[in-house]
Image (cartoon, rainbow, N blue to C red):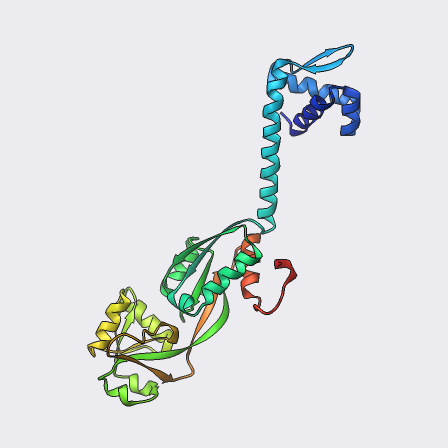
Length: 297
């Protein structure tokens, strides 16, 4: 059953005249008659009653017409939806984010831009940690990640650096370093680092990313409150992006580091995506907010 035969049938049902229908369809009348013959053979019953005065729908034809109109409307909607997905106007985007992306305001800004430029795009959010982002992207669990990039991130990923955050050290108010206004990296050589991570290896990667070298010892905790509790108890210190410091946590203070290391908040995505919607979102989110791009409204 061909779509053009169904469309011809609907026009014929409106005109009830082969000549006028053929003219509307820009085909010759014998071709239209052949289409209707093939359609009736496919359906398996007579859809049209023909006589010398013209043509009329049979009872089966009347029922068929109602269903065909609904089917053509559905095909039209499906075609339009597919077209819009194909040019990046419709679809779903999965975004992973870290705590630093939230506290810095980067995630909120990105969501606002997507909503303004592509209001019909569905955005799904998932919090993930920096050491998980490469795995989640590789397994196609998310399309983009907002967060810091660790030093061991694979080059296969496409990375857009969007902002830089200073690194601070969280220490006990009773720690020997508490009297210093700025802590130098040399001061940290013998320190134990307590970091928010699922494993020691992940904790080492976090510290290396933040201060530029491997620590002698790391204690990893998956609960940020536990990290600060251990810092409070002088079990060690933590280093973290400045936006993640909790100023009201008792007996924990934060000191700037004398270092040129910063946390680069980035948009990270797979390098092999050819999805028009993802390409459009990537370009939108990496275009400076004050630079108007007419393609995005």
